[in-house]
Image 1 (spheres, rainbow over the protein chains, first blue to last red):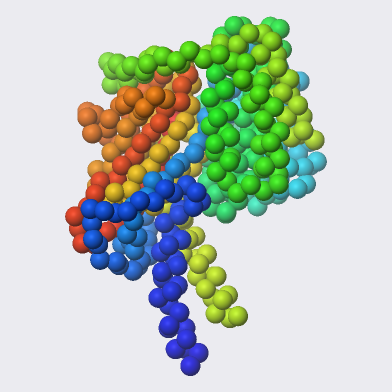
Image 2: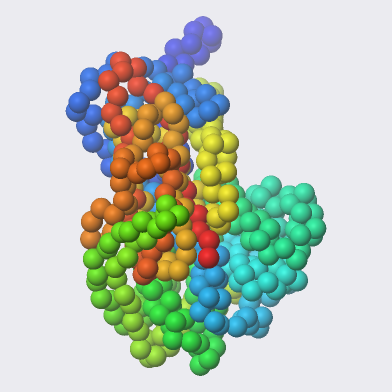
Length: 310
Length: 141
């Protein structure tokens, strides 16, 4: 009798599994379903995806999957350096504070903060600081249960290549990609959101330090972050709104208000092809902000960042 | 009660297995195309079927070189992608791209948001297959 009940449950299990499998880490809000009008397919039970990522589907309706992303802190750090700004060690959140963060929300936020500090130190070739931040990130990620992103093997590779900027950049970017992937895989998208949002805040915080000596180009780069803020807010709003994530996004509204002073001139996009085969996308918008607006952005970012590192 | 537990376990097992296989597919088939570029921190992968679409809106920063990869399981056929500017003007169409590769290299003269639109071709087959599609963005200065 018990055996028979289990057999009867199997089709339901397969059906539920097939339904869930179509999500691949995305939330239902990410999908805009529409009828598969041009086909009348035979419904086939999901036989499970093979090791190469393929299976017979049981889904009949097509959908539009909405992906979300934001530029990485490494990109922000690169543009700070390119603009001619100098490295300011005193602006970083001390790596020795990692043990202060005991809740998973605080650990995720400060993984983002330390990720931006690490990117900044690595881009400016402050290798000793980079190693300190990698250790702090290893410690926080272990606390969060994603210890495999920075294995002892990777840490040994870091030690062996401590003066190789390119190798360190690769390790940092691989680490944060793996962290994002692992948190999403674990169903902790809210924590992935905290990492991304706090990382962006810290990157902008570092860009806005010592504005009195900042070249004009850096001010333009800061003004352009208005667009990246949209990316970050859209990305984080797509995740389940836990109190910590909702609270951080609410506090970032003051940054959004400060960015309202940035003016934008729209321009039409153009494309041309280089000899190398790559494309150049020209035209597009231009951004400008006066010193008062940049100051307001710096002040709002400092408020949010200081709350994150408490 | 026992059946509820079995159902919940099966629920998690199927979702986790499909997700894990998509991650494995991405690691094995997609990430190496980003060699020489710093990969964006965001993992964007989905299981799609013929006729599905995917969209990604992302800001690209002036002065950086970018590589956009749309990596898909061969069972889905020629997955097409295009890049549109903030006003919806099409700037790049993979179906007109030579050589025929699953990535495009580009840079932007001004910082701007671009929309990447991915289209899985329809299929006339009686049995539809689903496969992983991953969108990756890498940059270098």
